[in-house]
Image (cartoon, rainbow, N blue to C red; front, side, top):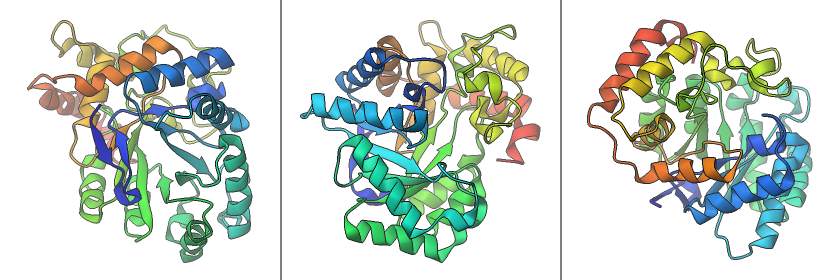
Length: 326
């Protein structure tokens, strides 16, 4: 699979990675055997980049990746984790002492002395402009606890604030065919600064798979059930913040714009990966078949008119409701 350098880390990663939120059982239960099989299938398909967080299953996702690495010591996988959601979402919590505690826990879960990349996990907006926060992150690099740091953001403005900092290696942002605002300023700024872009939620929580109807339901422990109104965390993380019914209609239009034989999910992932400035796309997978299918998008030849169709569908369904906020 094609590799790109992940910003200021200087490390190559596959253009399609693996998001592992679902392995923490926050999308419904995924047992340990199935989770490890997903990780194996991804690597066998050319994936060299896993994204996780210390709160995915309260560390379960990190621990599973640690188990996979111990059982597969020759697997060359770059692992990015995140920190900052374990305590109150108060800017005063983002201190060197807390950073040390959080990264120590992640190092233990992952079974490593030095974390490849640690990202601030969608912290309160003031954190992105706090000099002391970046000084603390620089200290962790100097101490060898982490090799590099980045941020995971909710908004374009947060991304731009982080990109302006010289130590920021990467920015993770929601970017998909239903969320195009990063194209305006974020991707150009990242290219200019040499900052990597990790695109999350590329399928809009599954909408762009084309498998859902307006009558589709999800289990009670799936965030697509309990967070549609943003009561648990930022609503943008669930269906990219779009109304579910509208999203289903837009997904049908997206699927109808594709030639026969190209799956909507693969096209959606490949389209994001093709955008100038994107380093890696991190769809999730709950089983081996999904992991293999997602990885196959890296070699998909996109229809010449797909970009125009993506913009037309976005303008028709989402620009007025989504673009102003994110």
